Length: 428
Image (tube, rainbow, N blue to C red; front, side, top):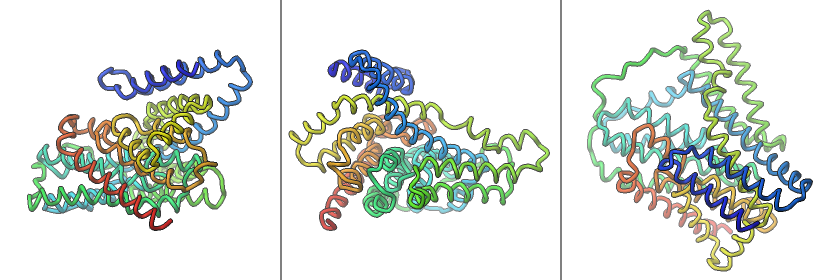
């Protein structure tokens, strides 16, 4: 049974990694893999009560992550529908490419820490189309945005789905992960920025000759500011809510979603244009969230749960400890692998490989895993949701990214990792 489970999981994993060449959505592969794995496990074990109990336990953990992601993605969609991100983007103005690169990098870094790396990448890459005329410049900026968004998402519990998984799973806490990973994540960004800033020199920003034809904003300045600051405020307040109430984070995000929904309905209740009002409602935002990604998380987390319950993951952990030995090297290898395959199943597998009894909350393993899995995906454009989004928005070629950006991302990744290892040894 164990051999068959491993074969099915590896095949499902390969289908996820080869999503683009196969032209099969990774969500379908994840669901198929989860279904097959649980079916094999149930039939081979023959103990329906035990398997049902383990499935219920796994579903509870999976549902917490899914509800949290659905709430956060809906809040972001509401802010975007109100053109709320203009509050940030309209303030970015400069005439030098190198200066613009630094500004864009830092905005993406801090924005992704509050929102998430995928949304930040979409917002910032879309902004570059309004600021830069030359396609080569836009491609290069898109690559830096991917690095910045992934680095920014790694050091907060709401900035990257892998960090969120570790936070909800109880492996890390809000204050400690922010204290431990802020400087390594910043180094991960600053090193590539310093290199690109030197290469760009004093080259000027060449803006588009004419703006793309766009429909005028349908929201007032008050509505944009209100939804932007309320949305960000709710996302930032979720860790505080968890600390004060000790309730799971998904409850905080759903509570905040209810508040935002109420405020939105009150603000727009007197509008006569039903079509315009409908476009701004939270109900419409719910229809616009990326349900394909949500379904993917459900499938992959349930698939990994089978490997955890059958003790396959703990056996892999023991093999790594025996043959590699050094924990820091093992985690750095996991980060490098996340550049090739999706970091969500990697982190899910790692959470199953190591127990909280062996590695307590906020230990070196969990914090370093959050950094490596979050930032290692920048090394290849297919290694993170942010990279895939940029690839789609700007039609970035895989091998162009390898030539121009991968080296920058790698030196940033190594620099941040070495700093964290040195910092941890000094502080502990």
